[in-house]
Amino acid sequence: MPDMNRLRSWAEGLTGSKPGQSAKSVLVIGLGRFGTALASTLGTLDVEVMAVDVDRTLVDEWADKLPHVRVADTSSSTALAQLGAANFDAVVVAIGTDIEASVLTTAALSDIGSPNIWAKAITAEHGRILERVGAHHVVFPEKEMGERVAHVVTGQVDDYFALDEGFVLAELRAPAEFVGRRLADTDLRARYQVTVVCIKPDGGTYTYATADTVIGAGDHLVIAGAVDAADRFAKKAGQ
Image (cartoon, rainbow, N blue to C red):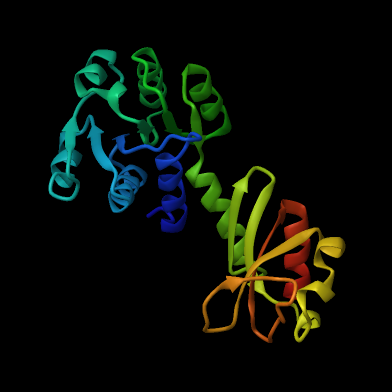
């Protein structure tokens, strides 16, 4: 199952992906694990969702779990027009391993004038093709999850979240040398080029970090910074 925190982030991106514009209706194409989880998450955000798949068995399976489910061959512009795809604020092409169907569906959506097309890519080449045929946003859920797990499994961070290709948030335990000190006195920005965004005592809840925040033993820090800088600080914290 896809990571739910990341899914919620993608879903929230869909509901406000353009300045001054939010998506109140979303068409999700593909009822695999990613598509169904995304459609379910969008439902929790009070978005009107229709889910579509060419496989009737999958549609029947999800008919009682999602409010609007349809069978359609979305590689056809005619079928998409009949679904009213261009009338949705956003469309997500969540088709899994069938790259041809993914590309043809994205191209067909572009042909009918869908204003906000999101597409799931398996590889970088797949992503480039999706962009060329009309996708406005391309996501790589498997790649992003792999990067996250790779960082977490080392034990150096508790969580890892890429905001874009070169900038991340990471949650980790406070290094022992900073315990008992004010953030302003640690000089983290100058020494490590990272910023502490928030802090949570062990077993407590997160609060915003300020210059006067004192780091306690066992505190969890959420840092923001470039990938290399965050990795260097994570290694420091793990020593």
